[in-house]
Amino acid sequence: MTPAPRRQTGRAGIASIIANGVKITGTIDADGAEIQVDGEVEGNVRGGSLTVGDTGMVKGDVISESVTVHGRVEGSVRARKVMLARNAHVIGDIVHQSLSVEMGAVFEGQCRYLQDPLSGTAAASPAPAASAAPQPQRSFGSVFGEPGGMGVVVTGTSG
Image (cartoon, rainbow, N blue to C red; front, side, top):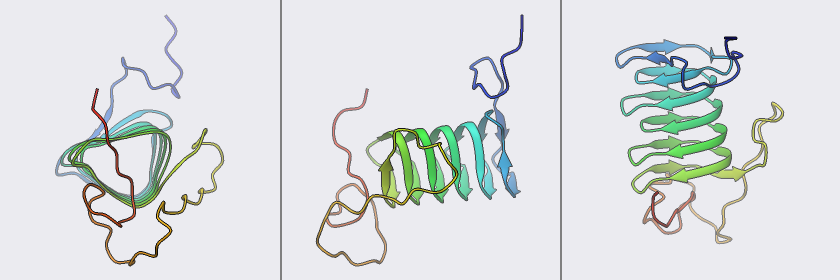
């Protein structure tokens, strides 16, 4: 049996885990591998699949095929598939092909859909806010239930 190429994110592979209580300072380039952050990363993260656990925090930009956030991300997120769980707190812009936000997640920033968000290295500028009325530029707050704030409000049922 031939091993799968390293760039593929396979379920049979073992995730690299940054455990709760561990702090890493610097860039993580996982070359398509699966990463789980339960500790803290101060720096940019690039991988095939990133999961930020309930106790996890990333302070830097994220580029990945798939990003699931249960904890906190302070920086931009660029991924084909982004999922913000109910405990997620993201401060930064999101460029995505697919975005899902569970009720209770906090997202402070702007998002932009791109057919291929991973193509090219230049950061895409986020789409302008949906409201044409000027808004104060202080804190954004939760995107759920606060009218006039910048961000995304998602309605519907979860599957």
